[in-house]
Length: 219
Image (cartoon, rainbow, N blue to C red):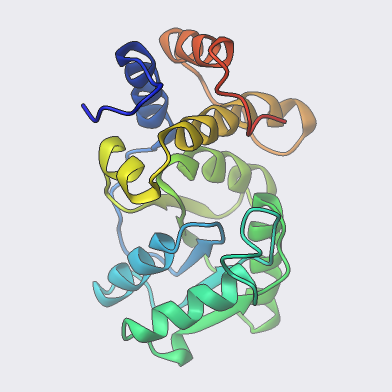
């Protein structure tokens, strides 16, 4: 267990249980196309390049514009920076499409679908590549807005400790885990995603972390 100042052992265990829940546990497999979902995490592009070189898909869409949390890091837009990074990792430009407008996960999926259709592509299977704690929300969103496509989710295979070290801010990471879980629970009521079963112990961990102040990324 990584020791983070200001975070108790119990809070760390609660965060780990939410981290585990957010991941779908899908085995990456060959698909028609992959979509790299824009965020602050350049690891999405790194892992997308790795999976491309493994031969899992022939075409990769990077989707994402700017947000308040990514504008400074990716001033030309998330998808643009993802593409540039993937090129440095040997992904050919001919295998990349860029969707530079999306501002949320629903738009990532819808605008990527429209871009693919505009280039004459109608995939039957899609690999969504995201931050590790965004897999479940990405899956639930895609099942809502693109129900006819087969969805597989993937993210860098990182343990919770390793991800916290990569970000360098344990409080922020736990806040993001809590915020994403709120969206998994709340978005179906808003029509943004399909329902997901949330285990009782995960909901209890979520409530405890909110009560302890891990709430900066909540709606």
